[in-house]
Length: 131
Image (cartoon, rainbow, N blue to C red; front, side, top):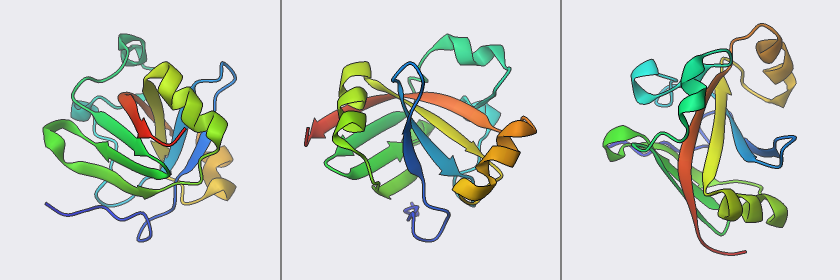
């Protein structure tokens, strides 16, 4: 099983949604494509209302985030620049909203969002320690 290393792809960044829900914005790349059969949905897709995708798992240990897709394959494994508040929100919500699409950095995220080309997925999440 190949480990997806964030240094080879655009690096993700943590965000808090307006309702204080934790999200991770992740540039798409080889090895972490948004496949519909894995539960990814477009921004207007009704599949977003189904809640967390139980076949996914997210573990946050201090600043190391590991996200596994269905079948236990690693979708992301690396350190992120998460604030204490963001880590607290992961702990409180028990889920993490993943946002991806055809962008490579924060600078081309907005044009991608404006054209409706983002994909979203909510993963169950747990904080191992490090609040």
